Amino acid sequence: MLTILQGVSWAFAGLAFILTGGRFWIRCTIIKKLSWDDAVHLLALLLLLAQIAIVSGATTVIYHPANLTQKDLSFYLRLDIAGVFISWCCFYAVKISFMLLYRRLFQISERFMKAWWIVMAIVFLTFWPLIVGILTECGSPSALGHIGTLPP
Image 1 (tube, one colour):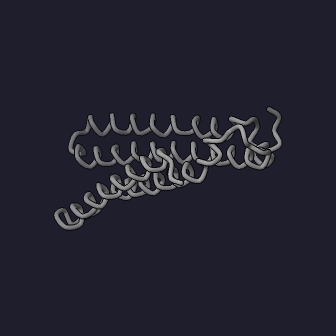
Image 2 (cartoon, one colour; image 1 turned 60 degrees about the vertical axis):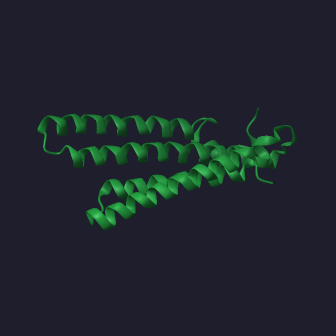
Image 3 (spheres, rainbow, N blue to C red; image 1 turned 120 degrees about the vertical axis):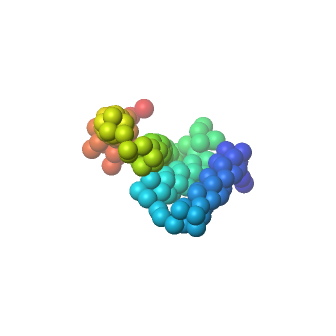
């Protein structure tokens, strides 16, 4: 049974796939050159598809929380951590893709390049606290191996 969340998610993923295909078609036929921003854009699309697949796989657990067994709880928590991790990686891949595109467009300005490096450093520095937060949301990272047996 397809839920509304799954339907909307896969519909927008299809739209993203079509727009990405159009981007690569333009880059390959008109510009005849791909760049690093294209590679990071493709990575973001693949991460988006992985995140939607995780959410789709967890819909039975998400929509019926009262019926969770210990095994289902462990499965849900692992999917939650993986989904949040992949979502943030996708968001940051999109940020980096835009940053690389801006760098390519505005590389003639020395002041812009200095500002670009500062913003890129901020982007990278803000990514790592998110990763640490994801891995420690259930306590110590060593507890990830015993996630289904954690106390409530």
